[in-house]
Length: 114
Length: 115
Image (cartoon, rainbow over all chains, first blue to last red):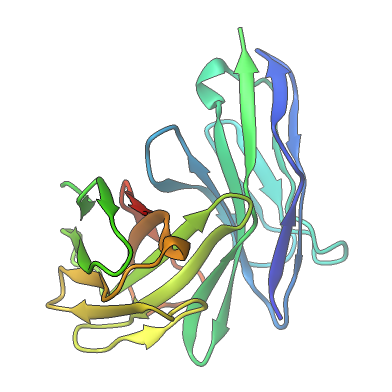
């Protein structure tokens, strides 16, 4: 079946440090890949997505590249800010029985200190 | 636009009680979803609705029922609450008919505690 594996958290960084959150997936067919972010007390919101192999999604300084050969979609940011502290979810979307099903990873909490 | 709204924000129930979680979206989206979020497990799909008048089971439907009242509203009902249903519940919507590239938009969540 389809599944997503994310690195365990929390990830603790100082402001302006480089961020990598690893995500690998297992899927049949050609899924779309997403990163969603959940800020404290809020629902999830889309951060970025990629819909085919070698696509790069980017938003707010975050980037992730869809790597089919390594089945990975790692999230990176060159210089994190305190305001980036949140929980980050990697997800894949695969069509089963003709309808999108989002499969989420367990989430990685990022804590950024000044 | 308010986006996706959910009520209530927080609820405490006793085992065996019933309740309905309400969700509404004002984006004219066709598809709506209910998820639960548990520690260490990410989000899991309970039910979804591809269009007004249709609903289908997701990964963890047992103990729940849903109603797609109209295009805007999608409610989740717990007929007889159990402690295992203690969780945070999120409603989401997407524009189309559930295509693989669609973005889902989430509400702020309902935190439910079943004693």
